Length: 285
Image 1 (cartoon, rainbow, N blue to C red):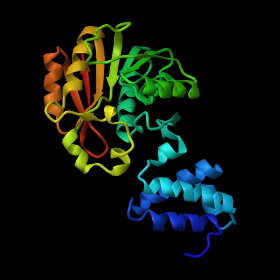
Image 2 (image 1 turned 60 degrees about the vertical axis):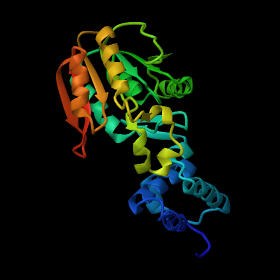
Image 3 (image 1 turned 90 degrees about the horizontal axis):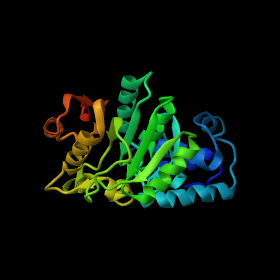
Image 4 (image 1 turned 45 degrees about the vertical axis):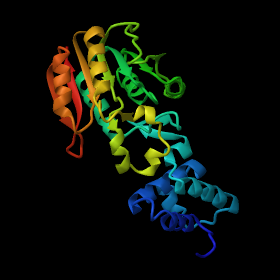
């Protein structure tokens, strides 16, 4: 290739170097995020300044990002942040990168709870994206969040501070025999691990090699273990008249419905995501 002189040259380099890794549209989005991270450029800036000369120092920074991308490192971990429900979140290898499907779950909760101020618990909060988004959009709500990982809670605390909300964070292990929670709640929500170990063969290396397995995978012989644990927890610590919201494995909507019914929940509603896959459930207690 010709020597790099402009930002457009860098974009062409990204498209050439990453063409065997990502679809072209995704490469463009990755490049936009890199330009925002390294130059504080918006998409409009990129198009308006695409032919402007750039320094060798900046070119080298883009090249360093390319090396990491070709090692399948997610761009969100490289830039150290991502956007979720209109808010900025710090992310790194200690937490999952928030997904669009989880934004849909948050939107469902907000549409139901608008104008209310419930006591909320987010189980397995990770980056804190659900808890922080609910706290930011439900004035007066009392939001708590827990996770088995102290490392994840450190990231969540950073995001609580970045977004200037109040969320009570604490360590909680669903499976170690610990049963007590500090309170009872009117709303409980979780995006628990639900990817079967056998499904690893279908996953891209950016997820498989870099995102925390503890937040993703469940045993092949017991893929719904987290849902049973959360259902039992909800039966004990969700107030009567309260709601449980879950992101679910698209392969098990009926099985998860049965788990919730057996735990005493009713009015169970399965909702599909924008791709038409059953990915969310709401249940009443």
